[in-house]
Amino acid sequence: MGLFSKKSPDKTVLILDIENGSVGSGLVNLSHGTAPQLFGEQRTQVPLMDTRSAMQLARAVSHAAGESLLHASEMSARMRHNLALGPVQKVVLFMAAPRGVPNLQAGKPDFAAAVSDSIAPHIQSLFGNVPIVPHTHASAAVHGMRALYPQEGNTILLSVNGEVSELVSLQDSRVVGHATAPSGLGTVLRTLKSHAGLSEHEARSALKLGHASEALDVAAAHFAGEFKEAIQNLEGTHEATSVFVLAHEPGAEWFAKALSHRSLSDVFPKGGVVRALRNHQVAPYVSTSGIPDLHLSLDALYTAAAHR
Image: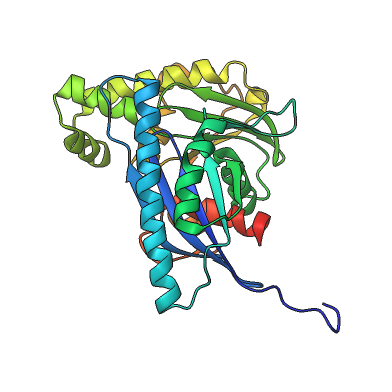
């Protein structure tokens, strides 16, 4: 730093993580020379629907986003009073497919404008006329991969969301391919409900504890089939030697195991390893105030790099 340079002041940024099965929010304190600090984390689950109606899902996600914003506003007021954090200066949206997807040909992401347009008035009513900056969910996941595994060679990052999962192919940390699969946590939970007669709560518990093994086997076979179809035309597949799975607990380990299904034996001719990304791996890079949310932690890590 020069003789008369000044350290950049702290910033308070709100991150809103918009997936297709939940919406997460958190306040990030960005301070020069320290890891980003995440406060007031919350994740609002979108109710599991028996049918995959795009219109109903969009309404449910919008409602969840409103709840998350209201919670963040309350937390922001509390943090300003108790911890002397400044007001929210920027809102950073992280949108998962199909609302936000990388466009490798254009060299910039594509966003569904309807999402940010629908929540912008709510943001302005709670936080004033602050900048709203969109990013893809994939950008935060890839940035996290580069931070956690800088020496990793050719790999595929699988991000499992509620109804749509994303696949990103990396070669020496460079993104070379992107694809989506019409399957996620919601698909597994509906399979458990229909095949084992479970409620949504019981289905989530069964996934965590490994109960209802027959129905879980059916779900694993279905998910593996969707993954295989999505990966057929993904650039860099045959060079990949590892797959990293990013999913909400308790599903990360289950989805990683699902990729060992026998139907996928011919997908990776060079073999490889499947690993689930876990909260403790990001912990050295992001300070959290409560139970860690891996997606929000990765969002905070990306926000610190892009918006400090």
